Image (cartoon, rainbow, N blue to C red):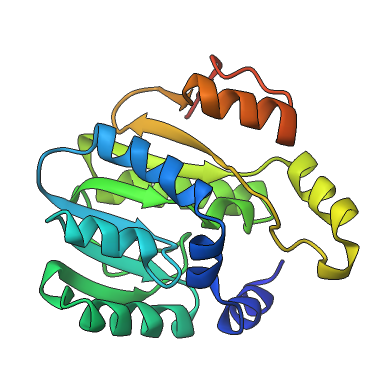
Length: 213
């Protein structure tokens, strides 16, 4: 999917409403995010969409930087922050490509989220660039949260609801918890989540680790 198609799609898609209607994804992700965050600090939500995770982190007292490729999503996030009286918690709202986090300094964030861009980036080169950028801006020893989908998930979506193409119908992503400066990332899921993922989405070994170079 080209950048233009992504921007066009999310400019007209209610991503905030999707997370409200299908809350399991948000509940599970926030459980693991909160479990491994530092007590306080500056968090980057990269590929944040309209900012549902960012708002929750701001409510928890974290300072937040929000970025997304789609200008309309960034505008919604800014409006949500104002509506919830959370603007003071935000260091900035940025329209940025995940592969080029221009203007964000090295070793800045106490934790970083990237819960969307990787399954929209279609080439390995772009995915590697996005991970490297997240690594660059996150402080050494800090936690990074990354969500992704398998190709099988996308195929199942298309078969279940062909009229909607590849729109996410039922999605419980797995989250990779990666500490900057370490050479491995570990997939984390509790037993209840593991059962959902195994039987509803795909078979996967949840004890596996993969190297990042």
